Length: 262
Image (cartoon, rainbow, N blue to C red; front, side, top):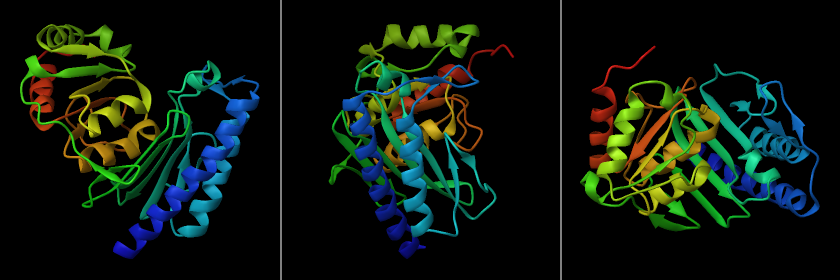
């Protein structure tokens, strides 16, 4: 499997680079926006970037399936499955803010084993392979050693669903007990977490393509990455609780210790 992961990492980084060229072209030139059936925007940059990524990944690892944001899944039952969001943060892209990225992850028999997170306009690329550590532009990164909530920096992303049940009160209590609260969102707060700039990330409304690569990166940087119920990320994941080991454990206890309305 080592040879496969070496080949896969090289391909994922090449694919991220190809996507970056397309995205940066349209960042400069501008694009028309189409609203999809789920009321989310899509652009030619999303679609061209995914096609470029698919071509590189399929050539490097033809035995793997590919599940992409724009063109769906060809076969999710294969031993290896690529998870691709070519332009995560399209709303930011079309509003001219740099909080968007390309997310490429590889799953092996249901377990996430590789991730590349590329934010070309923001100026960062992170990657990780299971058991090998996490890297920012080639330099190893590690989560902070923060151990108490009063020292913790918390960042939230999409939390609409969280506002509808008792976990909202639990989040409010954590914010009151924390050192500071931010809302970096998208790839950015996961990058900050992996390199020690934040201690806890909370989101309640997303899908696996948004965070698959970031889950590998945070874990390989020494963090803990689950959903809000403490489950490992999988194809059906819709929320995230990620943090330093101590802060994640305390946050999970607070969230699961309340009665959640269903």
